[in-house]
Every structure is written in structure tokens, then in C-alpha cells.
Image 1 (cartoon, rainbow over the protein chains, first blue to last red):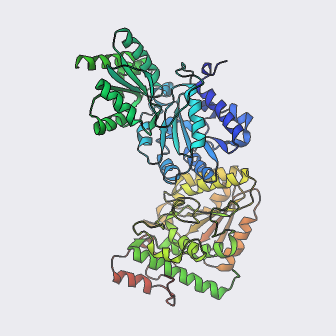
Image 2 (spheres, one colour; image 1 turned 180 degrees about the vertical axis):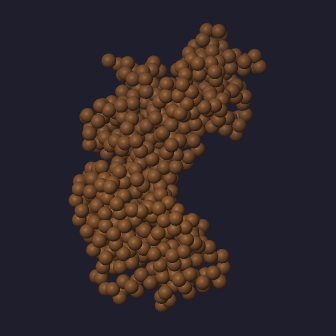
Length: 314
Length: 280
């Protein structure tokens, strides 16, 4: 079975096992959501001594992780995105980032992928709040190959890191040769009409939009941005100089996340018109993906529209 | 250092004088909760802890985590007096560019094991440190000092559940029970009683001690270290701002303001023992 035939969470658990095999200091920390994260039974049964389930106490998990990291362990602490970011923001700020303890925080079911758990669980601000934290790297992988390469990089980086983790199976974007590099954008398609910047889950929909636009004769410069922080200023600015128009798309509030990062970079380095697609400063709700795309206007057809609107103005 | 009551009494007086001087020079600071811990910290650093000032990160050292991170000054005096850094650093408390910040910082100060300052987090960190020690089959002990006001934080009780569940018997926690927090007496703010019963019900072995009595501290800490199969909590009955008469047992002693020479003299002259030569 090819890796991309597995769920993302299964690859998270499987990769953690590989990392523990290579370095017993790698630990899997969970707060009663280990089945949801894909580490139970995967890691729990293979490496029970490296598996620490703290129960429903996310704040405790982050600080236990900090204590373990201060002793040279490399803990991966996972929970639903809403709990792994906003619920524990102070613990992450002080015990992880400020203290510079080498903890890896994994937010599962990010953005609209929280689906039936609805508004309480749909976290649209994790990229923004984690990005605003000194010492913190912020990643959002789009497929299993990127996830695995990213985790291998994280183990060796000694860098406090926050990573989103989509749980279900997704189409492959990359293959086994992929090498993740922090602070590097990947060009998924080269074009000169409009720059399209996406991250994580939304990269799949941005690719579809770019394909359809191509058929219409619109050539998109598609940048996939797995490392929201550090951010690849050079590649973005180069693309903006080529196209003069930038559309961003993310399953996040348009305030502060990927769109925010792009606007900050461009307004300082090369002022360019930007359209941010995502959640327009609203909370989530129990709904299908299609409903949310249409309500907040950030699905494939909306990405296409936004790119075409820019071309009309050129 | 061999115990000699007269010598330790003199040392405690010197610690109180230096702590008060450091905080007054800085213009403000957390006096009360530093003075309440003087005898406990001296006993730990002179009679209990296995640490090496020449190698503060020595992997087999005992760890001490000051979860009530604002008690930095008492720890800084102990670390300086034990050779972790020069005593000349002490009067730089809170000065621009200092390595001695008001709240303890593992990246700034030799001998500080865990950064703390946002209350409730240090005991969880101590659980992680103790767990790492167990995973590595190490024999060193992990000490963690928490505040009574800090015990209002829910996270303290998450850590309490975890340590009890995991039977972290290499962890000895001490509650500095001076009965005061910033806005008043703990019994009026958010009563902790019955505190001993609470910790016991979380599956900890619990002791009480007079946190200003040398023999009681030494005996109780050793009993706590000897506990098997459970973490140990020592509820230390202490007096906030002990031996500084104008601040002792007053809520205002939590963080004093010292804007001028007159206020400086007020606190220094209120110390019980005045016969101290500052070491810097």
C-alpha cells in the first residue's frame, strides 16, 4: 500500500513510531484524543514506554512536555487544534516558546476539517496566534509525504514548533522524494497572471482552481506554503513582481494567518494588490465543507473568481 | 555544610538582609514570598540538594523548580552563595540587561532548571522533569516549590492528579503556605482548607512542617524523599515577609514599592537582624 492511501493521522502515528525507533528520546504525548490523532493503537502498542496519555488536561500536557524537553526528550503533544492552540496559549507561550523548550505541538482536525464537531471545535485562529509567538515555527502540511518529511525535520531541529494535522486521507501532492525545508515555499505551478498562495488543506482546492484556470487560459503562479513561519519572503516577492496580483487561500480567519503574513511581507517589500480568501472573521458551525465554502466564499469556484477578477482589473 | 544552629540563624539573617536590599535597590519586588522561603531554601542548598555549581547542567544533579517564579530573589542568593555565579550579580536584580529577572528563567541564570512566572505551570513542568528521570532510570530527586495563592490555579490540580496517577515518587513538592496572596488572606480569597486532605486525596504522601524551624525542615524533607510509590507534598507553614516587621504577615508585602531612600531605609531598618555586611 502506498503511503498516500493511508489517512494523514495514520501516517502521523506510523512516522512517530519510525522516529522513536531511531531515537528513543522521541515521545508521544496525548490528552485523551490518541485515537483521533492516530497514535493509538499505532504508537501506544508499539512503544508504550514512549506514550504518555495525561487525560483531559491539555495545559498539563504542554507543561509536562516542556519539563520533558528540558531534560532532552522530544515530545510531540497532540490534541484537537482548538485545544492545542487557543486553550493552552499561555502554557505554550511561557513554558515552551519563552523558555525555548523543544516541544512539538500538533493541532489535529484544523479549520473546517473539524466538521461535525462544529463551532466550538473549529479553530480559525491557530496559525495567527502561533505565528505571533517568538521562537515558534508554524507549519501546515498538505499531504502525507510533506507530513512525514516535516516530522523528520522537526525531530532534528531543536525548535519549538506548532504543526497542523489534517486527519483524513488526502490526495498526494508530492512523493517520497520530498524534502521539507522550514521557511521555503514550493512552486506547484508556474504562471505570470496571478499569484495564488495556499497552505495545508486548502492547497488541494487551490490546485483544482489553478487547473481549471489553466484550461481557461489563465496562468496562475501557485505557491504552496507549508511553513507559515518562518516565511519565504524572497519567493513571494519574486512572484508578486512577476504577476502584480496575489490571492491567498486558507481555512483560517483572514485576519492574521497566511493572508496576514502575505500582506505584511508585500506591504513592506513590494506593495501589491491582495485578495484574502478564508473565513471572513466569523466563527465556525456544524456544517459540510461545501456549505462553509459557499457561505464564506473560499471554495474552488471562489478562488477561480478571485483570480479572474484580478485579471479584469489588469 | 555541617549544621550549626547559630551559624544557620546568622546565614538566614544575612539572606533576608541581602534579599531586601536587592529588591529595594530594584525599586520594587516580591519581598514577602522570598522571605518566607529563606530557611527552606537554605536547608535545601546547604544540606539536601546534590548539585554542582561548576556544572549547573550536570545530568545527575537534583532539580529544583520554583513554580512560584516570583520568589526568584531567594533562589538567586542561594545560588550566588553556593558559587553558581558571582555575588556581584545580586544587586543587578531587574536592572536593564540583568541575568537575574524578577521571575526565574532557565536561559538566563545558572542553576535555574525551569522558567516560571505564569502561576500553575511549574508543577506540571516538574512532573515532566520527574517523568524524564524515571524514563532514564536516574536516581536524582526533583523538588518543586509552589505557592498557596498559586494553588488557586486549576493546573496545579491537573499536575497533582498526574503525579499521583504516575506514582512519581522522585518528586517532592513544597507548598509555601504563608496564608497570604496578593489581594488578601488565602482563607478569605479562595480557601484552600483542608489543604493536607486535598493532597492526600490526590494520592500524595503529605507532611506538614514549620517552614522556619531548621530541624523540622531537615527531618521532614528527608521523610518526603524517602517516600516510595507516591509523590510527596510538604505543606510548609510559613510567615510571609518573615523578620521584616513593617511587611511581615501583610498582603502588601507581596510586591513592595520602594521609590526613594526613605522607603529603602524603612524596609532595611525593619529587619530583625541589622548586623550584616553586604557581599557586594
